[in-house]
Length: 275
Image (cartoon, rainbow, N blue to C red; front, top):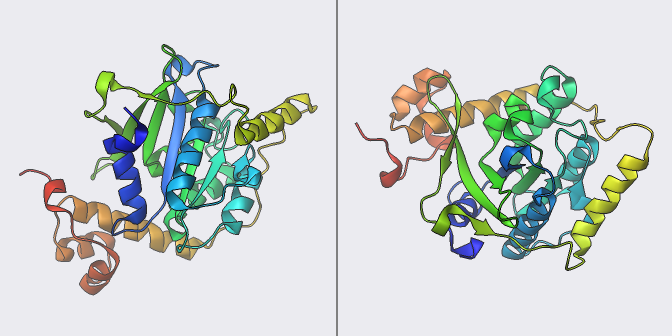
C-alpha cells in the first residue's frame, strides 16, 4: 500500500488543506530504539512526499541537526500561503529537545515554535531513538508518531497523537486501514538521494568535531503573549472537539463566546464523542 492511499496521509493533508489550514508535527522513532532502521531515510522520504504534494521547492537547508538551524529555517519559511517542510534529525542525540533537559530555555524555545507551527503551514519532521527521549512539550504538541520497524527494515507504522481533555495526558492511536499494519518507504541511501546525502554529511561533520554543539538554540524568545493566545485557541478547539458548546468553552478558557466562535471550528459530526 502506497502512503498516499492511507488514512494517515489523508489526515495529514486534511490538516494542511482542510478548514484549519495549519501545519503538522511528526516524531519518528524506532522499534526498541534500534539504530540502522532508516529513521533519517524515512524523514527524508516523508519530507519529499510532502514537498511534492505542496509544490514546495525543498532545499538542503531544510534538513537540520541543530535547534538553532531549525529555528532559523522556521523563521525563513513562507507564511501561511505556502505549505512547506523542515526536518530536524537526531532530536535528542544532537542535544535539541532532549527530555533530560526539560527545564532548559532551549527546549522552551523549541516547544514554543511547535506550539506556533500553524502560523506557518510547516510540516516539521523530527527523528530520535525513542518517543520518550523527546521533551514532554514536544510530545504534547506532536500530531503524529511514525515508528520505524526493525524487521522488515524499510517499513513504518503511523500513529495519531492525541491528549485527554481533563489532564492533557498524551496518547497514540493506531490506524486500522493499513494492510499488515505497516507502510513501506524507499532506501534513499542506495539511490544516492541528494537530501539524504546532505543530512549524512552534516552528521559526519558533527561526529568529527571535538564536541556536540548542534544543540545551540537561537536566544531570541518568542512573544509570550502570542504563545498564550495560541495556547488558548488550542485549548478552546480541543474543548469544542469534545462536543462542548461555545458558552461552555468560553467559561473554560476565560474568553467571550464571540471569541470562541471566531477562533474555533465546530467538530465534524463523525468526530463528536459518544454520550
